[in-house]
Image (cartoon, rainbow, N blue to C red; front, side, top):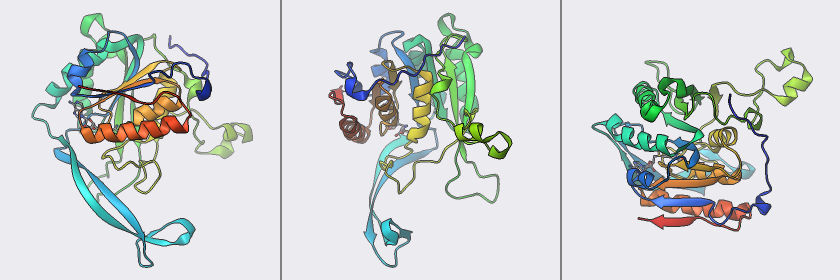
Length: 311
Ligand SMILES: C[S@@+](CC[C@H](N)C(=O)[O-])C[C@H]1O[C@@H](n2cnc3c(N)ncnc32)[C@H](O)[C@@H]1O
């Protein structure tokens, strides 16, 4: 049976484990994963490069007040956007994509606690191959293999250009595996709730409360002009990460992201009283996530700030 704990939201001010809430490791992730103990992490979320065949870049922009600008901002003022610089951040090109992922997934499986979960974020072009590979990995060392697969979550968004030659691809796939097929953390009560599609059919009380999500999650991408945007390529929305962290771990647990990028998983962990280990090989990612998490810890008034180990 899934394990469910009431979401005991401790006040961030009273947090006692703040000596090392966040560990940031600047490292190639396979060697870093090998240094982590067996059965030590309750939740792993990863968003690896998707093998798109392109180099992902970070573009810095600034907005300048301009009556002829293309955007309307605060107070109805018009602004134009100026591109400052485009920096290559990471190459997303693999000769043997599954050969790259497999040993890392084997380490992830070893590191998970007996009730732990893996969330693997991927796109529709690669998801089928990755699913078969993960079924195999979860069968290693006496694991139950395919029975450990719980859900394929479809993260649906609607942004950007729309193809007129085929249905526009507007979703990502998130595979959820558990170390044990039936004994795992699942705090459904801790999820955010979503509006009913036909609120008039369910009564005022239910409509006001909303309903729990299904395996299709409608959530906007990180807005290119919003406060959440860091400029890091392929940054994922905090709303998606917070839902995963709240439902699939408990306060005080450790969450691991070994393709951490801008540190979104770390922010979700920090906001929900979880500890976090973040790994990335890119110096730009490490600088950005350190700055982001230091700021977040200060906002939450946590005494412990990010501790950085560099190898
Ligand atoms: C898709 S991005 C992650 C974005 C992240 N989810 C966010 O919200 O910002 C993938 C990250 O994996 C990192 N990466 C790729 N291969 C790696 C490896 N072998 N070891 C460590 N980091 C790696 C890249 O530097 C990049 O930051």
